Length: 256
Length: 256
Image (cartoon, rainbow over all chains, first blue to last red; front, side, top):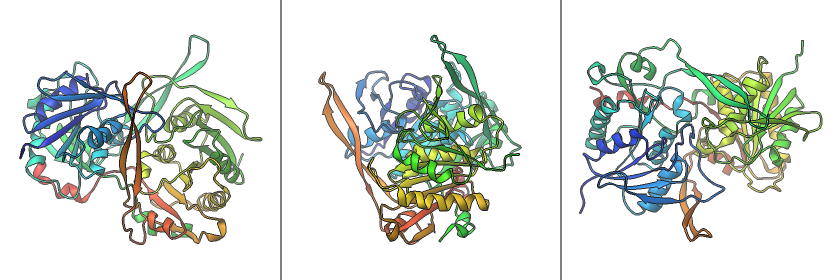
């Protein structure tokens, strides 16, 4: 019997992004890695799934000695097809997603394909971790992030998570020597100030291109934004029950 | 000064779907309605946003006396462009999304474009409601759902919501006389049993098309699935903080 854990690796920046390579290197120290990732960048896809058209996948030879597939769907499609077609009948011990190029702290978790892919496997009961580095550049240095991904993967494989199946891990854009450690956090309270760049297409039609800047409020100690600002890796145990329980009893006037 | 509330109407089934027409009829009894909805069906788009291409919108004349726009983006893009371009500098008093063709109860909230559009405006502090009818048919009878949408919109405009900005409302597929009332609920614990239909495209390439069936567990009283099964309209006060707070203190072994 094979005792090596089976680790599914995915992302939302696409299978050719440098971040997934760093994550494969981290994960393959601990088990058998299978990669199923989008064949093109899928940032901002949130929890989108493909319902109105079929998806396809192909085996690719991109990572030495690692079984890998590129898939035409969204990040969530990738983990669905991994679990129910490619790895059908096999137990997945861990799913890791990323390392994302850019932050998924605070409200960004909602828009993030990286986190949604990991959330999808967590819905299936599989321990799942999304990793993100606070650096959007394709030339980002992933070594510090890889160091912390290695540590966290090791810990999660050694001892099951309590009360949750999903971790949102963000790593500050700092040299390894300047990162102070790992903090368990709650989701911070930042949000986006939206702007649209207005322009005209070649046929004179107006278009709008989403832009905007992230607004960080004065964060209390304990939030992911606070941790990142103070040079810590933030880890937020996350779920998929969106109920605000206090609001059930406090809005009974809506009942009839 | 105009005292009529400004109500933004959107959906994910596209601006030509029968469900949005029923919702416009309900909402326009209470204020000025502006419609900004996708120009094509966008079911299952979750919280996807369009980052890598521009989006466009056009004024359309589909609803008597109602200002309406169709937009090339996702449901979340629609509410972003409504708030920041089309209704820029105007205060939106309420956003309603739907009426969706099919359930968004339980875990479906995560995949739902209908709910994500409403969640996006709730993130901006706008009271927001997503409505869904448990009937996928294009010929569904929306009259009972419209009756309850009218009641709930009236109540939310009359008295602010407590502790939350977003309601997930699901309406059972029943004649009006058989619906027993409205229940405040928590998100139920169902999930999808995934299946992929396998086939070959015209060039002999294998494809996979997402299918599957919804598995409803034995639900306790108080969940949205329980309420719907017992002929009630379910209302779940919902948020966007995904943190599992108990798991912060219970996983301190991950810290270093």
